[in-house]
Image (cartoon, rainbow, N blue to C red; front, side):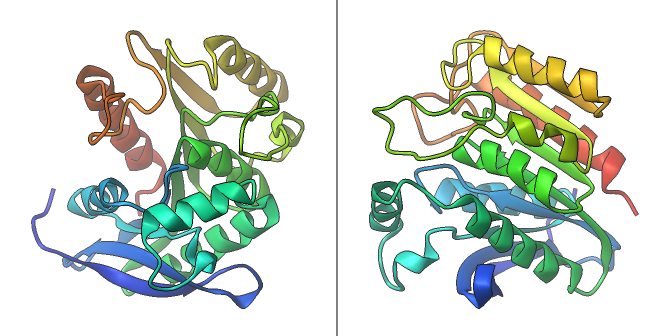
Length: 247
């Protein structure tokens, strides 16, 4: 780990040339450094997500989290941006892929980048991580309790999304999945279905389902936080990226 880092707000070019606000952090050492795109959860681009970006920088990665709700207006609070995006059914899949590609390009353009890119996402960002890994050439992906990969959202959900399991054959990189045994979206049964499909396709993956943990167990600022699962989950994340994003 390193204590010396730069962190702050930057602009990246997303889908169809849109300018997105993003939060980035990187070590001040000479590197080379792997890059990590952090996809925020459905509640949006918040302080806890920025803390995650800094955590990756402290562990030797250049990291960036694009604000996927930037199109809802500059100067709008993150909560209001998230509400506006949810009212539209969430971020369209094609737009998400373009935004992640722009964030990855930013990381690859940094001095001391080693050219390797990982993607990690939480909640809706977990599903979007799977989508990005099936749509772009990346080196490693981590899905943290991403729902609606196997099944569609329930009718009452504000999120409009199609299942992605039919895209599993396009998975471009090793996948780490971290899930809660008490979660409903995705349920352990859905996790098992996805794992079986990836096994059938010969796609490299490792899934872990943590007992006594539900949806959002990494969220340090929410009641769903489960320290034991989160601590073990972080160990697995850094071990996984360490294997796949090293120079």
